[in-house]
Image (cartoon, rainbow, N blue to C red):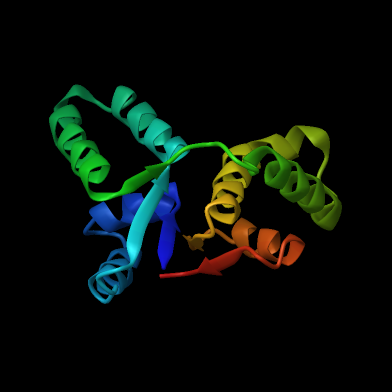
Length: 146
């Protein structure tokens, strides 16, 4: 099974002080040998953005974490049917929640990560409630909370 971890899940895996860390670490340790952990290229982008906006005193630690993440996870690109899934999920959430055009944009990366999970047949791992709504829009989207 392939698991696509969203950005918050990856961050929580590396932050020993958040409540979610223990359960995520436990699930990672329980994975079978043929299971694969993946991140989206967008998560890589968000991690680099965090690095660039961190205080100088944190940069060395963050760079080591990012480098470890890049070695540990497969990085999934935006290709295949991602654009079509993105449009379906964005339109669906807009209609489901009756969100206006301006506010729907704040979920664009969430839509793209979910679309990547659909395109690559991955289980999306996140505790972000928006993904539960997206799973209602496309029942092929499998979401787990670790």
